[in-house]
Image (cartoon, one colour):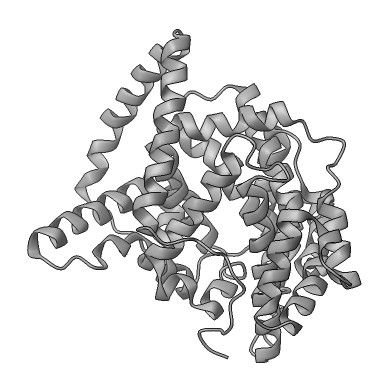
Length: 387
């Protein structure tokens, strides 16, 4: 009898991390039950479900007449701000990504998202939904909108866009999980539960700890205090997303140790990992209608592959079939330039403030151009790509 690859991977991780693996493994089968209960109610309401959700987000759950227990329980939880949340620290955390400007966008696309695709279990909900294969560029832009909203000043306050989008994504995850399980094609013995707590935590770390590592790799100087603030921001965002409190790191040190453990238990990249990576990296080619536009898109794609290799490391990049190209020679001088600019910023409050201002404009522009005037609704999906 063939032993599931999940079991093999866990055994290998146990040899390195000991009983920490045994404490993490149960989260592969745990999901966001509050989100599941809430989305079942909203689904039963048909088109009216979106209206009720919008009312609850804008005016509170008491504004929803006869709100069912499932929806009320969700909003009762998220409307209570945990005692550990520090708004000033969260605002300082958001400044880190904003002052990084385009470098933050590079790390998000070439490292964080791609690293998420590398997980053979964690990538399967994307494969089932078809989100990245069908509309890679669009979904990348929606992710940018989410990150921009979460890291904006007051974005995670009760009336902030980051709060609302986080709740919508949480319910979207629950709906995808519901449809995947109904398809009968999910292999729990290999992948755990769909969008389980192990993978939700891993995704959170890709938006937080992985971004910090990536920025430093490109020459951005991030202090320990800044890193801890950024981790704190994503700790709260992940809690709103339905992440289990036991798996929410409170510092960069905790996040790094947890990221190493999760990486050891997720398994090597598979064919879906490589297909998703290719769809993302080659998304600039979509819509390139003229020879000149295609040439420019090909250069962007090649540069993206080079950055991905630098940020992910050759071993993981090889596993994802990311090609080697001459653009890699551009990265060392780029890093040197970034480091020089960072030294100026560190010693000039004016330069620091200007970096935040320019980075804020960059993220706003990315969202405006990426969505091309459309609105990122983050609504509940109605079908899977297959199943």
